[in-house]
Image: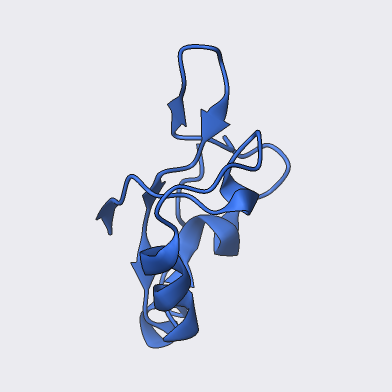
Length: 77
């Protein structure tokens, strides 16, 4: 979990990528992005905004599949 300061196209308002290799690797290894796992249409989409208002989700929490099944709720706001 942490301040990855990275984003994929899916996590960027303008479809920009920034250092996505680590995020992609975590997903390839089977780790689960808890925001994607728990988000809905009312969830805050971005965790950081560029001065021009473009949003990015650069802060993520990844967990193992086993841990994800034990979590009751994760805040996406």
